Length: 240
Ligand SMILES: [Zn+2]
Image (cartoon, rainbow, N blue to C red; front, side, top):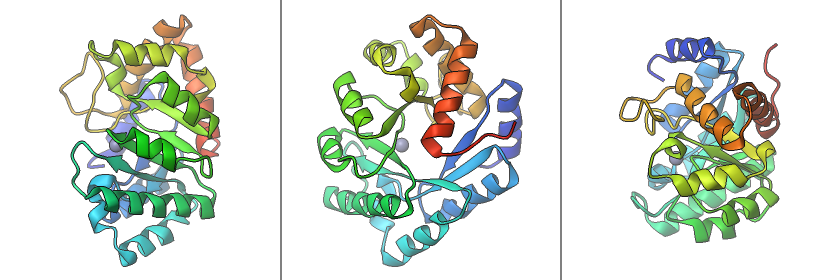
């Protein structure tokens, strides 16, 4: 967000096409939309990350709802549950996620889901009423298949390239390829060989390369697949 134009230029130079910049709280929602308005290959999402759920009062959520109606906002989120850090109490996180699911349903937009150590509650709550994206996926193949059936896409961050993540690579290998997306989780989770640096969109090429080797296809094919998945997941058409 600090220098989005430069980061986007570097990504386009690497052949990356089509971006969604998600907010995490009210304070950064307008900024995400502003970036989307400046670039015709960028769209925004708005919502409260579970870390910020305790700040999602009625007035703040009403403002998110107003911003969510903007034509450049193509998803609600990121929203979800995080029982690892538990920055907001569990009951608050659940109530706030319910609000976001209800908004996504009313606006007929997908939801971007953050899930950490909360999979059981998540599978119960994502009941198929709303479609969406499971961001920075780290769960099992069974959970992925169940949620794909309910309308979800599976998005991989740099984690899938980490040496310790063999079980996640096994999941990526087995998934239906028309449901896979790639992402940064900027500034976190830079893929190998950039691990430890601030992440940026240009680096998603490394995740595409990994998928190409897992699926035994050319990099171009992964690019075409994830690009058309992106258009379908967010109901957008990239500028030609
Ligand atoms: Zn997240």
